[in-house]
Every structure is written in C-alpha cells, then in structure tokens.
Image (cartoon, rainbow, N blue to C red; front, top):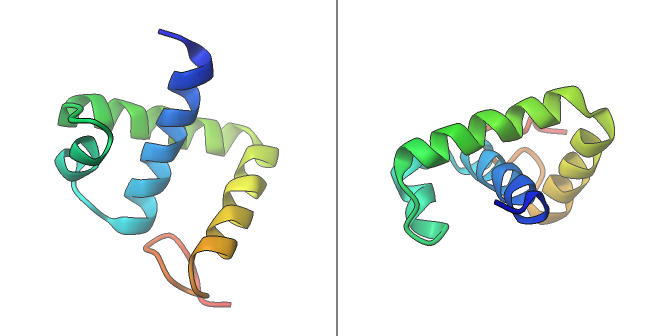
Length: 79
C-alpha cells in the first residue's frame, strides 16, 4: 500500500476516534466500509505517530482548535 495514502488515513482515523468517540465499525463505515479490525490497527498506528512526532501532534492540535469549538471532542480540554 502507498505510504502517501495510508499514513494520513491512519492519522485521520485516529483523530476521528479521539475526537468523536465513535466505534471502530462506525469509523470504518465512514472511511469507505473498512473493517473494524483495520480501523483499530489504523488508530493504533496513528496514535503512535502522534506520540513520536511532536511536530505532527502540534499540527493535529492546531487543526482540532480550528475545527472544533473550545473544549469540544473527547480528547480536548477546555481552554
């Protein structure tokens, strides 16, 4: 699989899980009917990337702040 597509998809699934709290199955359906086990793996990989890359984590946080109201989302604290 192409890393240029797979990596960002993993990250998007991880962020969807983090900020919506939806089930793996619901996220999989939103991402083209992917299996819940595939989504679980993608979320794990996306979270690992966020934990190991502070610059990527900062970009993800900036996107969250721009997209969601203050304090919205399961992973966001009120500011």
